[in-house]
Every structure is written in structure tokens, then in C-alpha cells.
Image (cartoon, rainbow, N blue to C red; front, side):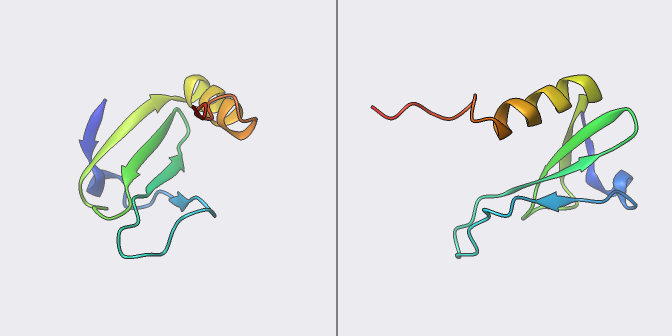
Length: 74
């Protein structure tokens, strides 16, 4: 589900600690809401957000934190 990011003015957004601070940084921000997780482009904070049900969002965060989603080097 996508919505305008201004609808989440009170949300606590977090960026990865691995964010590259360079000029071409490509980052997303995450917010944990009561029933949904939200993701947005950190460079377009008033732009659209992607909402994911909390259970799916937590499963994604757990899997990514365990390295289960790391890309395989070829």
C-alpha cells in the first residue's frame, strides 16, 4: 500500500547505520507503526511510503538482520 508521506508526520523514522553519506547516497528510512511498517526514500520524505503488515515487516527485518537476504557474490 502506498500513501503520501506527510500523513506520517509523527512517525519515528530511522535510517540504517550503514548509510553512505556521500553525494549519491541511496537510502531508505523505516518507521514501525502499531499495525504497519513503513518504508520511504530518505531523499524524498514528503513522497510516497510503502506500508507492510507488522508481521511481514518484522519477518523481513529479522531475515535481513541474520544475513538471509544478502546477495550472493558471483
